[in-house]
Length: 144
Image (cartoon, rainbow, N blue to C red; front, side, top):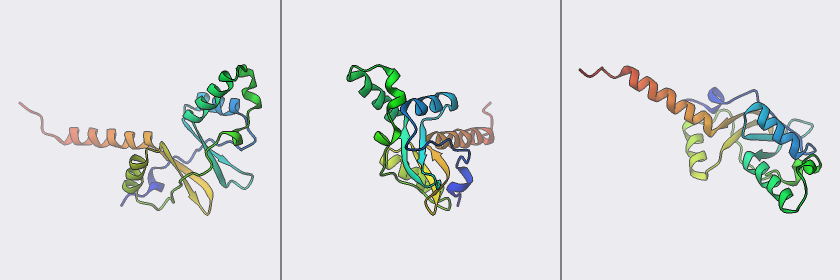
């Protein structure tokens, strides 16, 4: 059995509830990520911000006839998802993939005793699928 711990990303970019919408936008742009776990002072996960959340909060600002300069004043705690699903690093990777697919989640933060240890995303599973396809193609005999 392959565990989530074996495939998770451990260099996870995080923010705190007191950071701003602008902070989230910049972190996503600079790091090329679509999910940001939100942690408290004790490194316990308290929420999650997705690219979709950032777009929704940005759209809300614009629909209220405010400028995007206000993005620095919108705190993450006002638009983050609080009720998040997490996974233990010892969990079965296949089961985690099925869970993501079934619930249409983009990621699962990996936690131990509430503390963030990593993250596994839908992109990680696409990379795994590509690797497996390449291995299968390499092992196929060439046709004449």
